[in-house]
Length: 273
Length: 232
Image (cartoon, rainbow over all chains, first blue to last red; front, side, top):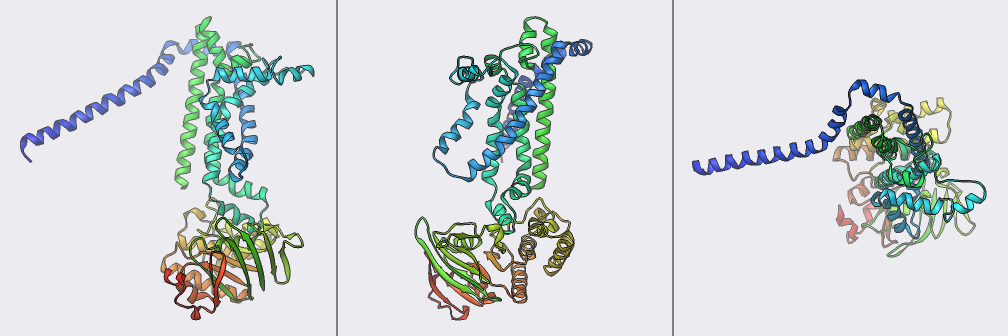
C-alpha cells in the first residue's frame, strides 16, 4: 500500500468515526434534553411541595387505579382472546387482525370521538344505556374504556405473536400425557410465554397511563373523576405551571421504571433461551 | 394389541390405512415427507379427528366413528413422543417426568416412586433438578421417553425420535426403547425416514405413500426398490 493510500484510508476511517459520533450525540441530546429540562426547570423543594397538592394526588391516584383496572381487564380478556385467535381459523380473521392494530395508528382523539359517538348519552348504544339510567361518557368508567381501546393492542399483538411462535408440540404433548386444556394452558402455554406477556402488559400499562386524547374526548376533564395525570398536566400548564411540571416529572419517572422493567424481563428471557 | 383402521381426507390425498400392532412389537412406519405418517399418529393419539375410524387398544375401543365413540386425547393413555421431543424447557427433568402422573392426580408417593424408577432406567437421575431447556438433544429425548413411559401407557408412539441426535445418543435411545417395549409388552409405533432405524429396532415395517400402505413386512424383507429405502 502506498503512503498516500494509507493516509487516505486513515482519514476516511477518522471521518466515519466523527460522523457517527456527531449523529449519535445529536440524536441522544435531542431525546434527552427535553427530559433533562423538566428536571432543571423545577427545584427539588418546589417539587416536594407540589407533589402534596390535592390536584396532583387526585390525578396520580385516579391514573394509577384506572390503569391497574385497565391492565387487569386487558390481561384477563386479552390472553384467552389472543390464544383462541391464534389457534383457530374463522371467517373474518383478517379483519379482526386489522382491527386489533387499528388503535395503534388511529389518532387518540379520533378514538375518543368514536367512543363518544357509540357510548355517549345520545350515541348509537349510549341512548339505550341512558334509558336505564346508565351513563358511560364523562365518568371514571369512560376513562378505563378509553384506556382499554387505545392501549390493549400493545398486549394483544404481543400475546398473538407469542402464541403463534409457540410450537404446538408442547401443548399436544401435555394433552397426550393426560392434562386437560386448562391445565395445559396454565402449566405449559402461559409459563412458556410469560416473559413476553409481561413485556406486553408493561407496555400496555405505560400507554394507558399516558393516554390523553381519547380520555379528554370521551371522559372529559373532571378533577377527581376523569382528570388523569396527562390531563392534569394540560390543566396545570394553563394555570399553576408547577403542578404541570411536577406531574410531568412523575410520569417521566414512571415511564423510566416501565422501560427498565421491560428491559429486565427481556434480559431474563434471553438468559433462559 | 392395537387394531386401527382410519380414513381421513387431507388436502392432497385421502389417508386410508389399517394395521395391527402386537404387544411387544415395534412397527416402524416409513414413508416420504407428507405421506401421512405423523397424521396417522395424531389420529391414533386423538389429537386429530378422523373422518372414519375404528381404533381398539387392548380390547378397549378408543374411537369408533360409526358408534360415535371418541375417547378424549387425555384419557387414551398413549405415550406419544412428538418430533423434537417437546420437553417443557421451564420445568426440571423431574417435573417433566412427573407431569403426566400429576395430570392424572396420582398419589404423591407413587409419583415419586415412578419418577425415580424411570429416571434411573433412562439414565437421567443425575439431571433431576436441571431445567430441561439446558439439556442436550440426546438427554431431552431420554426425558421425553421417560415422561411418556411414566404414565404406563398402553401404546408407545414416537415421531422421528432420532432425527436430531448424534450416533451415540441415537443408539442409546434405540436400545432403551427396544428394552422397555419388550419389558412392558406394549405395542410401539415409530415413525422414521431412515432404513437403518427400521432394520435395527423394527420388528415390522410399514411403508406408506400418499396415505396408502405400499408395503408391509419384516424389515429385512423390505424390497430395495422402495423409494423410502434410499433415504437413509
